[in-house]
Image 1 (cartoon, rainbow, N blue to C red):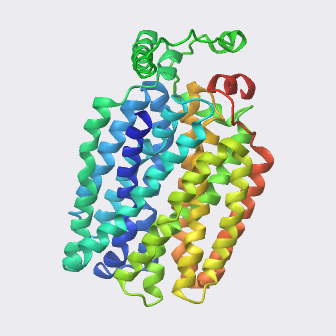
Image 2: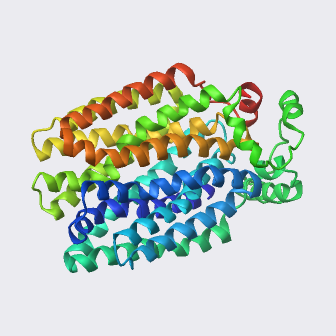
Image 3: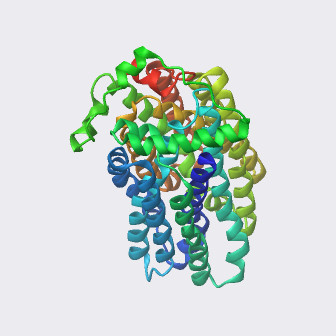
Length: 442
């Protein structure tokens, strides 16, 4: 139930994020945008995420996972609807940037919540479900584009699509009504009675399903003694903890890995329809090709989540990113649109497909009191600032200057560097409980 509920929030977020790539070919013509304008608009929501993610992670460690998930979803979905009424490029750019503040909270909370609810043997598999929900969400914008864009005049079409993408704002009520707060987080901040009520309800449900009482819990005394004292609620100085030993090296390594995957992810989300249009493919066909490419991530993510529990986080990341590097190079050197679709599908199967175990991997690098802060630091700097803002802005400029072959070669080199750093310096974490990780890693 928990995994399904937070997956719904990720579908809503991916729909809102991916909508920009769908409307971009239309907006670029309607507003007569330069390559620099295109880069700024594509990077705007990522910049908002960068600004908002570390504060959102800190607030989640202080006030709880559920309130931040609700607030973030309400903020960005409302912003998507508001963006539909932008009178000009400047206003659209501003609203998309502000919407990113809400996307920041919604993006990291599901992985924090699931890592604190599910068992050590299924965290990776459930992370695959979460990231598959993102993949489903990214399939919706090109589908909406096929349904809406041809039926309206260009200046109205992109606005109608944004309104449609923002309507799932009502999902906030579902989260409020049915999603429980993390009992692990509640207990670590001293709210024991609330944690006990949630656990008791879960236990009653399990006993009804089993038809018998649950056995007594098995307690590891060493671990219980190591983590039993409830720390004070983090203050703003706790933001620096992830940059100190023993977390410093793993934080830097995970940031590098995030850049490698996000550089491919963002060019796909924002630019794949435009790349096909530049090859003189009609817009409706470009949406179909984009749908095929982005759809390839779904089996990739499901398989990644399962394999990550058998071979480990590090090895599965290495395998997936090695395939992604080759595919990125092949995509850039494709001679025909069909070759672009084939290489693009492999690229998206592997690069965004590597995300489930990787996201759970960097969530497992940090103890419960600073988990969301650590996740937010890795994702905001690596995935969003370097990969989502700077790279997204530079991509159309590099494309115009060097062409797609050289630009995608640069992407491949970035992937090689990411793999080398992460596999060399990040510790393996799979098959350990959250409490064991707290003792053994930090």
